[in-house]
Amino acid sequence: MEVTERIEGFVGEVSGLDLSKTVENNDAAAVRVAWARAPVLIFPDQALEPDSMLSFGSVFGEPQPEPPMNQTYLEEGADAVSYVGNINKDGSPYPFGNMRATAWHSDQSYLEEPVSGGILHALKMPSRGGGTLFCNMYAAYRALDLALRERLDQMIGLHGYNVGRRGETGPPLDEGKHGIWPTVRHPIVRTHPVTGRKALYVNPAHTFGIEGLDDDAALLNELLDHVEDEARFFYYHHWTVGDVVVWDQRCLMHRGAGDAPTDETRFLMRLKIAGDRPV
Image 1 (cartoon, one colour):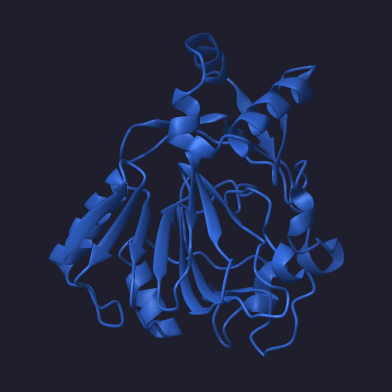
Image 2: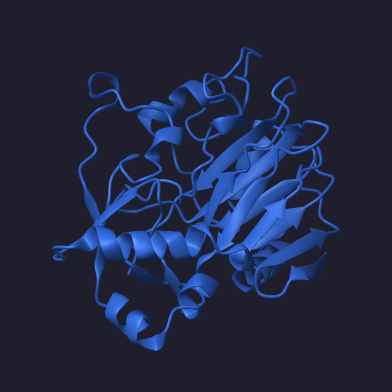
């Protein structure tokens, strides 16, 4: 196994592993060390089935079942392996097309215990475009001035399903089918449980307010503008069929680029890794 750094402290590439087979304990430990150093890890030239996706996901933790509003995308008989793209698994067009999940977000921040990681595996990709963007929230936090960082360290953000200012690009919520998802409270600055580093933990899909602040919209919009508009925090992954990408949702946002040709297919297998309560 070899790890090559693409972007220091952000993106790494791992070679020498066949993820269709069980990852041995020593390699699994080395992958976790690499993930702590580079929260986006790329594993090229892989060929995963749903079972091997689950097996590889166990390197990072327990699989996170999909919520009710995402269950139409699940692998048959599964509760955690699902698919994303501009088509459904049966080949029919996805209603949102290329615009699915094109708002910056951290998956399921509307849960008391949001997911810790995400895994995507490219199955079919267009001739151009169709990438995924990742935003380094460690770097976004460090780029703020000291006085604002100290202020934010004491603040709590309010999260709900697709109620942020960019919440319209996900599946709509039908309370009759999907239940009621109450507001949850998370620190605006969370401390990573492995690295001990601080990262901003807000996103424009699910974060809608700041607890105890009368004029919370101004500050929240300032933070969201900061992370949405600064290309220095971003990595655009150009997918090749066979790529597996693992990212740390405790210190990153992500989004689909939405730039694939509308008459070409983009289709990926997905798995989320369960997490714990942000602190």
